[in-house]
Image (cartoon, rainbow, N blue to C red; front, side, top):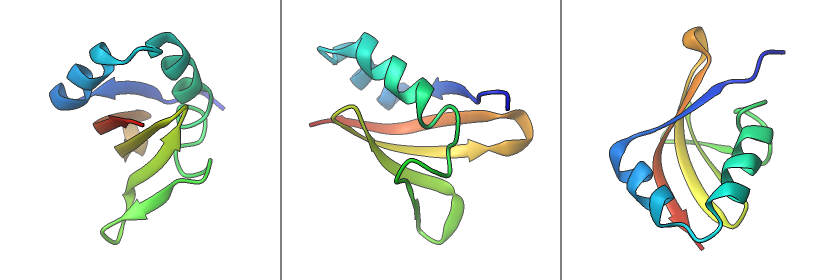
Length: 80
């Protein structure tokens, strides 16, 4: 299966730039959510299957899945 591309909305991109372990996080999200955005312990948010939340490498990630273009857009990122 082709992995999903990971993109970041401006607020999440700002949080990503400030992360201490950015490289480890990017590798982890690519290997988990990027391979199966509906798995890895994620839950749907607000009744919409494509709006999801998961914990990845010590961060809470809220994202939207665009299946037709195989992209996961991270809209909120909170490092724990």
